[in-house]
Length: 386
Ligand code: GLA
Image 1: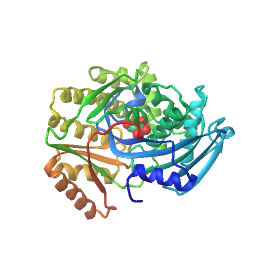
Image 2: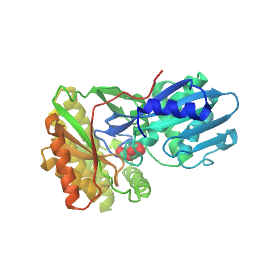
Image 3: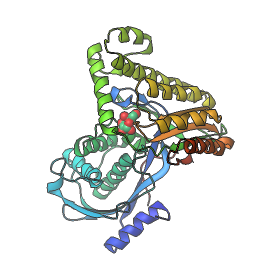
């Protein structure tokens, strides 16, 4: 697949349907700077949007049917009102599209029929939220085509319902919030309890820094089951502690809380979430003070916590973090749900290539599949392109 992603979506549309699309809508992938597995604990996260995007070219149809082509699979699928009457009738990648139609209709919006063509630069299965990007781009398209009103701050919940209920993945609110609400040059400080946000300036260029994203290429090892298992542990622990969610335990209260839990594994899970929330607050405080370089140790501490307490890293990921730090990264951590996916490293801009090379060398020594690397700047959230 070559060429600009927006052009590919439009070209696909024209080839398939023989007319120009009415418009194109884009939504980005995301990385999370810090705050992992805190979203479903009502806590804090700090993601930013990537310059990699999913683009939907679309037009409106008079009947209640949706035809969707995706460049990735090369397939075209069609579904009708019956298929979105209840969750689960469309499967595979089409479920993310049908899920958005279902969630909009379920919330009482009269969704127009539509023809869509989808192209994407967000790699699948790399933990960069390709699914949220797809949901958000489809949602933006359908809202515009139908002249439907849904304020940006309410869109993430709707896209999340598509994923939780229609697709059946029990994810939190971070990814959809990031891909819809992020702004260029900023990280999104999101309170996952009330969904209030603050756009925190994250000016890497001014600080002479770069964020290197390393796709570990690690095969996902039971990621779905492990994710659901971590979520359950946290909810059970909150109940045992008598709080609505683990967000309600502060670091000052942590020791007393841990003493009330009799299972060592649960204690470790709780310690990760409580300390991770605090690390997000500390990172935000440093960024507000313009001290971008100083967030490095917090990123690395987050990784150690995910590795030792939450136990969601894998050898490829730990290797990438260790090699990046040994090559001079200011901080490095896995980003996303875990069990594979990506690592991000905060590096001096002029050492990004050396750090990437060090990671590749460490991988080669262990016979891991070579990683993909990319330096990124915080990009805007979902938008209409023309
Ligand atoms: C995945 C989920 C998010 C969040 C992260 C972990 O990306 O989709 O909701 O829980 O994992 O922070």
